[in-house]
Structure formats: C-alpha cells, structure tokens
Amino acid sequence: MSFLAALAIAGTLAAAILAAHWRGETGAALTIQVPAPNDPAAQGGGTRQTAVLALLAGNPAVSAAHLLSPAELDALLQPWLGATTASLALPVPAVITGDWSGAGPPEALRDALDAAAPGTLLETGARWAARIAALTTSIQTCAVAVLLIVAFVASAVVAVATRAGLAQRREAIEIIHGLGAFDGDIAGRFAGRATALAAAGAAVGTLLALPVLFWLALLAAPFAGFAPGATLPALPAPLWVALPALPAAAALIGWGTTQLTVRGWLRRLN
Amino acid sequence: MVRFEDVWLKYRRSRATAGAAPDVLRGLSFEVPDGGFRWLTGPSGAGKTSVLKLMYLAEQPSRGRIEILDTFAGRASRRETALLRRRIGVVYQDFRLLAHLSAYDNVALPMRLARRAEPQIRNDVTELLRWVGLSGKLDHRPDELSGGEQQRVAIARAVIGQPRLLLADEPTGNLDDAQAERLMMLITALNRLGTTVIVATHNAGLVSALPGAVPAHRRRPAGWLKAEAASTSLGCAPPAPTGCCRCWSAP
Image (cartoon, rainbow over all chains, first blue to last red; front, top):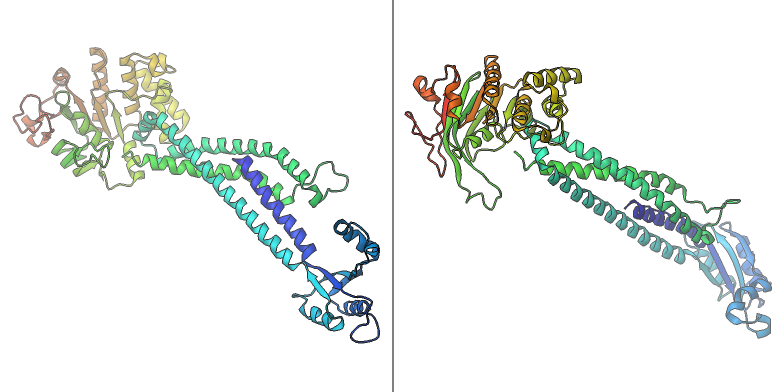
C-alpha cells in the first residue's frame, strides 16, 4: 500500500512541478507573425517589420524581443516544408519572439500591432498554460483518489486482520474483560501491535518504491533535467518530506482502525 | 450488598431471536448484605450459573434491577463497570484460565490490571500459590496442571485482589476432600474479613459439611432466593421443595 501511495505522491508532485515549469515558460511567451514584413508600414516611413519591432521595444511589458533570422526560420519550418523557404519562394512572415510580463492578456498590444501593421498576429502561451493547468489538476485529482483508495484498502485490511485476531483470542479477551480490564487497555494492546506492523510494513514498501521513483525520474529527466555532476536524477524536495511521512500515516491508520474495531467489538460484551 | 429486584433473564444471542428467546430466570428477588455468606444450591440446569453471571455482570437482566456493591448494573458506564468487576472475584466452573500464561501470570492478572507494583505482585502471588499448594508449579501452564490444580489457580486468581464480593461456581468440583476443606477455610476467612461470598453448588454434602451452616429459611425467610426457570420450576418459598435453587447463610 505504501508502495502505491509513494508512486501516487510522486506522480502528483512531478505533475505539479512540471506544470509550474511549463506554465512559467509558455504562459509568458509571445509569438508575433508579421505578414509581408518588408512592405511599408501604415504609419511612418519604415517597413511593417521595423514598425512592429519599434512598438515592441517601446513597450515595457515586453522583453527579450527577438526577430528570427532566415536560418532560424528555416530550421523551424524545414520539418514541415521539407526544404528551405527561399527555395520554395513562399511568402514567409517575419517571426518575432519575446516574453510578456504584463498584468493581464496583451490585448492593447495586439490592437497597437494591428494598427501599426495590419494583419499582424500575436499569440501567447496563455491558452496552453490553461490546458496544462487543467491537465495537472486532473492528474492531481487522480493521485488524491488513489491515495484515498490506498488508505481505505489499508484500513479495511487492518480491520479484517483485527477481527480475525479478536476471533482467535475471543476467550482470552472475555476472561480479561471479566477481570475488569478497560476497553482502552484491550484496544491499546491490539492497536500497539497493529501500529508497529503498519509502520514497519509501510517503511519497507516506501524503501521498495525508491528505485522505481528514481527510474521514473530518469524517464522524466528530458523534461526536468539533471543536476550538474549528478549520476541519478534528483527527486523533488517535497517528495523527500512526503516519503518519510508514509510510515507515520500508515501507523496512524493502523492505530485508529484497530482502536475503532476492537472497541466496537467489545461493545458486544456486557 | 447484592440486591436483585424482580429480575428476569433471557439469553439474547441476536436481535432477531430476542423476542423468541425463553426466559431463563423469572422474577428473581433477593438481597445479600455486605459481609454475608450464601450458598446457592440446586440441581444442574436450575439457573445457578445464570444468577452468578448476572452478579459478575456478564449478562444484563431483561427486566428488573440489580444492585452490586452500591452500583446499579446497567446504569454504570463501561469504565465504572470495569472498575466494579475488579472488586468482584469469580471462580468459574470451567476455571477460565489463560492457556498461554503460567499459573503465576494467571494469578497475577487482576493485580496487573489494577496496575499494582511488580514487587507487591510477586510477593502476593507467590505467597497465595504457596498457600494453595502450588509453590512448585508457578511456571506451569494450565495444560500442565491437573484439574484440581487448575481449580486452585482459578481460586487464587479470584481472591488475589481481596475482592469485596466473591462468587464461586462449583469451586470444589475437582478437589479432593482435604483440598475442598482447605478452600472453604480460605473462603470463610475472606468472609470474616468482610468479603461477601456467594457459592453455587449442587453438592449438598459440602453445604452440610460447613460447620454451623444453617438453611436460611430457618432463621431468615427473606434469605430465600426466589427464582423460576422456564423449564424447571425454581419458584420456591419456604419450605423449599426438592431441587429448588436455595440461598443459605453460613454463620
């Protein structure tokens, strides 16, 4: 159970971290296409491309504006076109990338660009960021559901084992109960053992999950990246906090379930 | 004090069968004062063990009121009931020893539940087991003891905590005459120290052998235990018919 819980926690943490990483990159990205970049601009004496670049340079919310060179454009389009844009004589627009740090969506910038060079397209990563956020939320919901199911199954297993133990020791418990033992004394004996077993089992399960977690982190390395000089991919820091908590959580489930089961069973005795 | 007022009992094994269950005891009323000694007699199946079960709170009456050592059974919380059980020593007919514990640990159980200090437990248990003739068998488990020895362990466990109420169900059933006499000496000694004692037995010889035992109805008609079982007529008023459940007082 702790093995599955460790995987579920690792999954939700990895999804959250990657989503935050991607949201930061794509949410702020600007891509501007200027069709017919060398045509005269609507205002001023320059071309449409220079008018757009000037507008971007003058906007404090736009940074790192970069006009893709013909070589960069070719590298970008060659996988789809199969040849250089020059050889195909296609009317390729100028492409400018940048980062947006404004408070809201860059609608005013879109209008200004359209006024300076009509037909200019402005795209942001906000739509993709929203999709990634939705995907992350659904992954995290699934992980929470898995954790709840794991906790429920673990609790059910402990309850069944406890009831089996009670049935096996029924006569001894009735004798001790008859001698004046408190319900808490009897439940405490069972709960102490269940707590120790649950904690030990969860610790073993968590340790067994570690190699799998490193393997999964290795698979995710192209997205998350390696630490410099490291031979193993780094596990997220919150995971190192969550993993030791698993045996404690299992112990708590074992203790609580056993207490409830034994006390409920003892209620049947007078 | 032990007081039964119009107590009825039926064994309810489940809610479904509760209504159909027969009455085991009907309209039982009696009172045993603090420090009293009573014999509970009658043939097998007369309901002696059922009366004792009500006294040591293993069963709840289906009707009526039971007062044990100034506590009304059924009204006490579970904790109060557990504390009350610690003041009641019980010698069961089938001994009810814990098979995985030694004779010493079985006798020590009530003291450990009461969280007495281990040195005190060691002294008291060792002394009592020596007194009942089991000083050489402290470490023996019940299955390594004879029936009589097991019974002596059960008796030692019942009296180790110096209970205020001692209930014994056929306590001499597996003992020879000498051991039975020795046991009754212990029980009467406890009674003289103030313990209320109720002994159930169908052994009329044991009752008559106790020096000075007098049927209660000769001295105290109110001492009669009035009970009625569903299948066996226990309803008796003095003079008692043969086979009824009697309550006698010892001097």
